[in-house]
Amino acid sequence: MRDAPPVLLAGVGDEASPDLDGQLEALRRLGFRGIELRTLDGVAVADLDPARFAAAARRIAEDGMSVVALASRIGGWARPVSGPFGRDLGELRILADRAHALGCRFIRIMSYPNQGLDGAGWRREAMRRVAELVELAAALDVTLLHENCSGWASQGVEHTLAMLREIESPHLGLLFDVGNVRVADQDPVAFLGRVLPHVRHVHVKDVVWDANGAAQFTWPGEGEAQLAECLSMLEAAGYAGAIAIEPHLAHIPHLGITADTATLRECFVEFGGRFERIARAVWRAGRSQ
Image 1 (cartoon, rainbow, N blue to C red):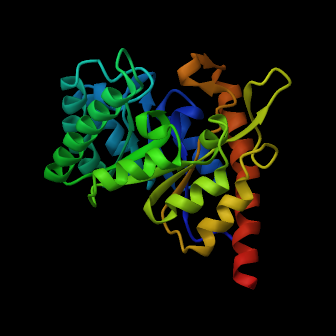
Image 2 (cartoon, rainbow, N blue to C red; image 1 turned 45 degrees about the horizontal axis):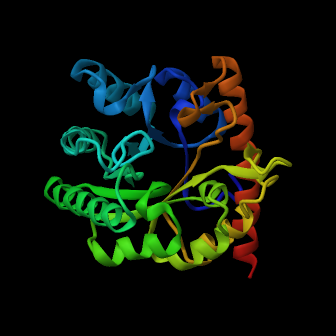
């Protein structure tokens, strides 16, 4: 497509449809060639039985779609720092095998919301866990991408940078979610400017704050996430990774919100089309400079 950005456009599949065929169909309609896998029919990728996973892998390969990342629940909003750590190590082992089968190297993690620890104890235990996960990831030849969503390192850019200094490894990078920064009442451009060299994958959503002081998700470019400005920074830096839409308009997992399949798909496709127009304009402007 003329003026299309030279990055792989993708989407978090279950934001478009519960089932894999619906996820792939929505991405084909957009002309996006990457998919980030989170759940299939409501089942997390790590929990799929081997036969069902193998069938899904074959279907994705037949479609010619690239798997850009696997979402995990490791360190996420439902797995606090005082919870059992063994389940996260086990999930990572399963996802690493599945990532290799899919030709993918990236697994998304977070850094453990607090539960019952003081501030110093939270940092110490969260970093111990992430460090052990990164060590295992290195042995399994995959890369963990910390998303600025939930956990100790998601409190702000200083926390994120502290994690990267403490756990310095080529097997740990960042998943920069444009909208999540604004949900946390932080400045997306300022945040990205500090972490840009570490960003390996990008999520796109947009956010407005309503009259009651609550964050509400909205169409790309219509919110306060400074989406075009962040894309311009990525373009200027020569970012060549994937950019995946995660609209959170009709499907918001952490809130238990989801719409019917037709609404999911149409909302996803509309969001993707609007986002692509913004991205195309940003990369076109970058080429003209």
